[in-house]
Length: 309
Picture 1 (spheres, rainbow, N blue to C red):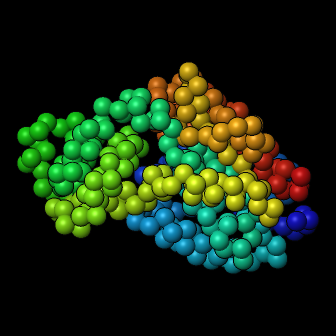
Picture 2 (cartoon, helix red, strand yellow; picture 1 turned 120 degrees about the horizontal axis):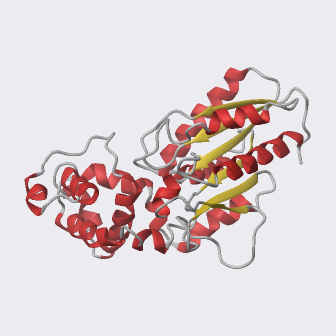
Picture 3 (tube, rainbow, N blue to C red; picture 1 turned 180 degrees about the vertical axis):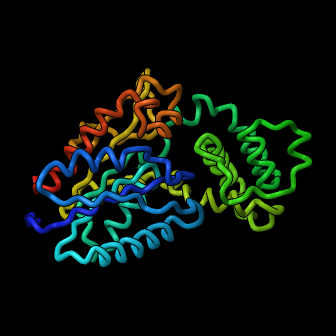
């Protein structure tokens, strides 16, 4: 698309699974300071915090509705949209860009988004000990509170047996817990346990709703590869995928096999203790020694976007 001097570039940052308004730290402000040095007009905003539960399709629809209103509110003759999605939000942003072609989305930047699922390392390093706990709790159909207590705080068996109160929607189970839950849910699905989820004791719905949001990570590999292929080859959408790498070459995300891709970029972090820490700490120099490089690269993406390069 040719670039007009009157074009407004609307850049939206979207948090991922169990994220919130603080997910991106100072990234929005850092980007705004850098890109607005040129003649283009950038509006950089963070999408309001939302519940990462239930259908992924609902999250896509809600983002689309909000974005339509926001574009209209700008009241500019030309608006072009760039979506920066962290974690699962990279998948949400991609699905929106692919499905709602009436929206002026020109670029999608995925930040540590597990398009092809979680790396096996994420399930085995630091969280592998939680797998059997998660499997056992799912199979026994314990309350969500007990599940959260056991996975996150390593509660005793007595604590689990006594727990009956469901976790509130604002409670943080996080990727450490969901890594075990995703692995455990695959076993539960195979054993027919998941089909009985509505009969499980009070609070289990909270768990299954959150598992539903990340259920694409345990889907057919062909479907996961198809989504990635459609977004990275779409001639209408400029796509980039940044992924974290820690010491030893370990990653949060599974990457595509084969040759190097121009849209795939490593974010090296030697500070993070494990893959999940790198994933969650991606946007702060205190937790990511590669933050400055990441910021520079994102600025280059946006400025190239603004000049039509």
